[in-house]
Length: 547
Image (cartoon, rainbow, N blue to C red):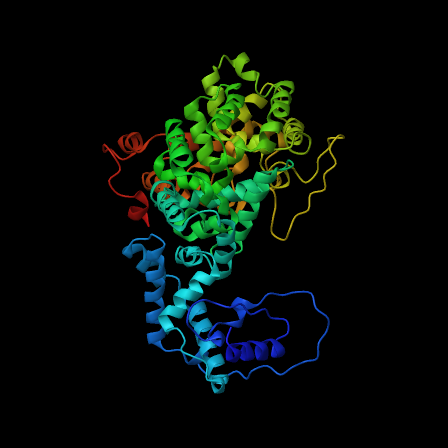
């Protein structure tokens, strides 16, 4: 080191005692580098405060649009040095504005330091574009931060994930992301926001102790739920892909040929369509880390109740976390409980085969995540208490298995419950009455409601505000029939008020025809038109004729 350089170096050390300055081989000013790159914190004794160099207050370091353009060009050149194509390098540098700004700010900070220390007459410095590349290299992430920001991660998250992926090369990471977005998380099939609804069901119905995979998934859901749009955006793959990488960065450590491709092929073979695969992984990302052989062994658990591969594929579309360790461990206990309560073995008594049982399981797999004592037993006991006998209980559960995971207070409990073994306090918010209690208030007895449930179990799942109340009001106030008529035909509540009940009633009223609810609604459109309108089918909405 020359005498002059040593003098400058010593001067800097005296003013910044906690900073370590390192020599560089390139021909440039020592003070042309940002202090942040040479700063090495170390243990020291307190030292007197020394004044710092003044900062110039201006538009961030007198930045110009030309600076940003040059910076993007420099980053593109640097990425090409790392093995990226021209197209990829331009795309990344154009879609990582925070990263570009960070490097530009660093270079401008150097220029200000040079301006403050210009009196020292130090030698030539690197050009602006060279300094951008130098700083990018000094960051040590080898372009990963810029790429991760370009796929949607905020800068701070991109830096965190890049550290996790330090062992991976940038071209390898880019290849994995492209494969996932093209083959797994492409434009998904999420009709009606089912992914968000199913995620919410998991958050609501999981009543057993969860393992690490389930906990991570719940945290992932909570992160998305806190964003604008909530869980409804879960089905929008482009919007949620960045949250997936933030929560599960090790996805980018999975090899494509030996893991991702075989996993996609395996899931397709068991009935998961390629267009829906992204939704399955978004609902339970840890599946991507499972070994195929391990998944097959988990499937053997469900085969015990007759679930075929095609049924399991359907189950994964709706409820993929059934493969989690906690639910698998809970499964054997649930099977024993079902046998004790004769909820599964009743199929043998009815002469149903295992395929039918498998369909029931695939329809409502939430039961595998329900706690036996606090959820399943409670539901069965309350159904029995309400008047559903052991003879009718299997049929009710077969027709409406969702009753086993529904909200007891909202669905089953009447205002007073005499069962000595059950002590439940029903709290009702303003304007809210549970289904059973509402039907009793409308004039139906407990026995009549139990009969309705036996005949039509899905009745338990209907909303008071959206289904029961408006249809009963129309029955009583417009059709003019007594409330007891729904006891004989509870399926009345399953038909659309606007599209079927009202149009058919107005047709019959216009012809002065009176008939039962079953006759009015039980026929298909062609049969109804032929019998009551004298035509082969209903060409126009009857409601339009009689309004």
